Image (cartoon, rainbow, N blue to C red; front, side, top):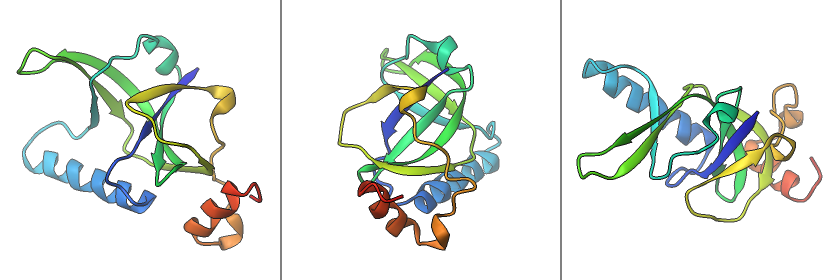
Length: 142
């Protein structure tokens, strides 16, 4: 199993990402399009079989890995301008993870299973606000 990691540009929080996903899916539903979440990238991963064996796309929000979405499919295509691109088909469920600081980078990167942060499920941070959990995690205290 292998994962991807990518910056979530223009999003300030997990709640923002969830709102964006809900908006886009509703927009597709109203237009009679398939209600699946697609994220378009320029480069197509080469290790598709490893990624689709339970892999996720981990999102970096505001300088920290904060959540993930299960990868359902990877669909290479050529756009209207003749440029090769790729649709990452994601499960529209956002899973919070134990926040981990991550510096900026371009595009996506592979993320090995051993380097992926654990899900926050079952670890509610003592009921602390997510921003405080992120700060404590960045200090190694959570």
